[in-house]
Image (cartoon, rainbow, N blue to C red):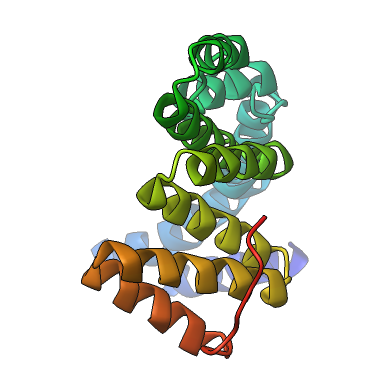
Amino acid sequence: MSATLVAVAGLAVAAIEINGLAGAILLLLPLAVLLIVVVRTLRTPQPQPIRQSKIMSAMHTEALPQSTEVDEPATAAVEAVAAPRKPERAASDWQKRIEAAEAAKDLPTVASAYLAFAREEIAVGETARAAEHLRSSVRAAAKGKLASIQAEARLELAELARAAGDLTTACEHWQIARGLFHQLQQVAELGETEKLMQRHGCPTDWVLNDF
């Protein structure tokens, strides 16, 4: 500030020696510079835009809901609606049908009903009960000399055994089914059964006892 005053004084002395308009301009110029310096010194500093932006950002963040969790009950309800229903048939309905057929000594109905019942049990994962129904179907079919139904039940039993890792039992059922298809002259089914046996390394010359 003192340096500015000295400069103003020097210029003022110099302006005294200069006459006319030029002298007046030189005299007023230092005063204008001094006025600008004083105004800038006294001006209240304005808040910086970046800081305002940060504060506003924090305010908006606080105003937002803090919980971002999914509504689990609602999600579960949607999944429950979207999930496919398993095919169901009351076991009592099948039992009543089978009991009525057994009472009437209707072996074809008994054998086919047990087979259909077993397939529905397989569809819902009840493999143990399905195997029992399949064996009942085989017994009724063998008693009634229903080779086609017995062969189909044997194929289902073979698949259950294969899935459980028991290839010996699976091969036995495939072998018997192959013989039944041969008797029925069902060439396509015979060929498919032989392919299954070859794929899993089953012997093709077994002589097995029926049960």
